[in-house]
Image (cartoon, rainbow, N blue to C red; front, side, top):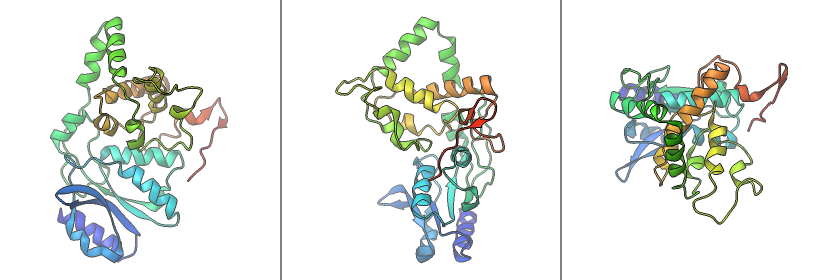
Length: 269
């Protein structure tokens, strides 16, 4: 832990970053916290809790970047967080020159729980690399079902949805200025559960964009297996376009390219 804290202290003391977005314990709970030069002594209380602290730091960093566009910020990042940062760079939502990584390796317990193929950041300032999980048993179980049984299982899961928007609101990859899930022509109102299209529209948006952090599923009060759904969607994009979500240097998302030459640019924040 001290190695990570010393890195943060140095970054702040030397003015290399305006702040460090990490975690601190408040009233016995690990919570996101912005450490700055003005409160550098608080770095002694900075923590890493990859098995306990589950917050969308990438999403919070987007808000910081929007408010302080000239500032450079450090961020605590697990493997999934870094995948998110890489995608956000490609979509023009963050400037990689203004982000400094403070990397964390997840525990084997967390990697197994998430079925994560990359449970550590490219820079590891805390923890030790564990064994990646290259196959998802949850996805394999769905794949093994007969088509009709799988269809009924998904319908039953979608039928539990209460349209709370928790999956969207916690997702670090939901950065659209206008959300299709609130479009009157697409989404009916006043119905619980909502039309099945609610979950299908979001699944389409997550295909090729989901970083597999699992926050949506953990935030879902209806226990819908969203992580399995988006893993399947990402696998389809990988098969069709050979595009690996969150990998650096893989070019733009296939959803940014129209035809052979036209590129749909996303307006930066």
